[in-house]
Image (cartoon, rainbow, N blue to C red; front, side, top):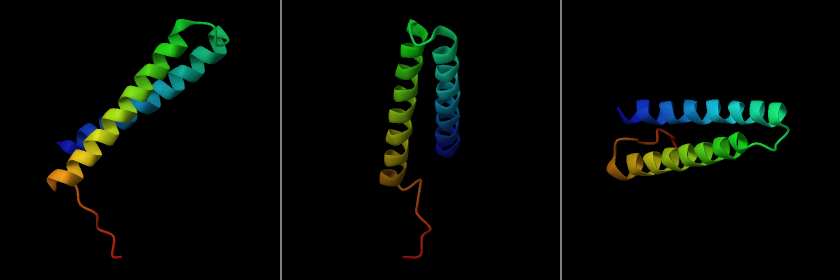
Length: 67
């Protein structure tokens, strides 16, 4: 469940990134839609980071690295 939420937030971040690019080209950076896309992208990134940290803290996510 946690991995699915993280994946969903990463996909939302990518969608927001490309919608911001579209708004930048279409509005030439003067519209409020670009700023809204930036806020959404920053929020999704912060939530993703928080979920990953919580997953490691709670033990639901573990590292399989041999070092």
